[in-house]
Image (cartoon, rainbow over all chains, first blue to last red; front, side, top):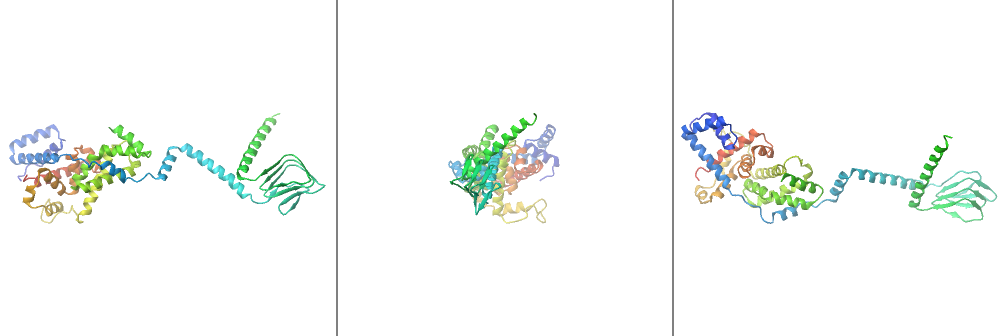
Length: 210
Length: 187
């Protein structure tokens, strides 16, 4: 090929790209008129482009969509859950709070497997049974966990027994007896006493200013 | 069109597979066409086009909705095609210049290696011949030529799809065009 100016080759490429300035275009056209080699090259390139573009548009097979969809991975449950968490941050936080709170309550219930009771004078303990002996009088509320209660004397106050039982006997109890056996009831009891405590604080704060 | 597609994509992100079927419906022919022109084989084209859709689906959360979906999708497809082409070819360093032949590199050698005999070329129909010559182009020129002349995309978009600077895209189109001109000169 004859050595035509470099800028003419550039201009021809730019022209074929459809990206040329008007001055370059004028230079190119002027050159093409005078140079048969470049003219030939230009025609051949244009013909090439026309051939490539004539490679007519082909279509995907008719079952293409169906086959593609069959290849997709099934929606994973995990992905679903993750997406849900991402989209509902507030609900996620609330759910997490609920889970943690209940976990705490249940773990409290499970941890307190040890036998324990409210210390009061005059009480007698035999194994895991708390006894109010005959002839004695105990004043005040009594809470027993994981143990039983037998009253032979007198008890002036409320009784709460968790995971244990009150064995009916000849004694006298002035107050309420509550037996809690199940986790759920323990939960309920905790909530109830929590509210009571809160209420009493509220009462106290009302009282104090006076 | 873009708003419509973005609506579908939002649904896909929420786990709606049917919305993705509509996206496949929309782009199937263009994507299949790119793959077919790149690979020159219908079975492979179908396989790679499906693979491209599958990857788009799996990675849909990485798609930035401010950009053009087709650009992203074509990019996945052209990368898969180029990978496939390279797996089939021996591992030459294609950019290395051939000694004693200024301006010629390994591309021209490879291109000439697997040429069919003249009489066989003459028996081909024009479209078949054009496809054959496109498939003889080195893969990096091929991608640029297919996107430019068959998909008729603007240069800026091609540069984004191929992740190359505009100047490089232009060079590849020029070289691809020049190579095709030589290959098709007897047509």
